[in-house]
Length: 57
Image (cartoon, rainbow, N blue to C red; front, side, top):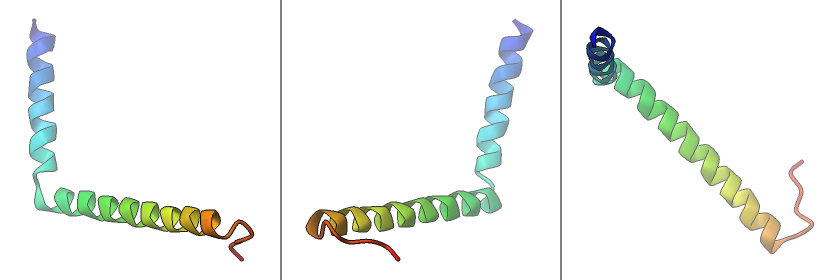
């Protein structure tokens, strides 16, 4: 039973740690970079669909 209580405390600490402003800023930066990468990949896919001979040089 002690291990179960210890785990819930670990989860609470992790959630509180994510709530700190510097960690939220890091998460926001990562999300922004991932969304930018997805937008670039989508743009390349669209260009490859419209222009089959399109290459990135």
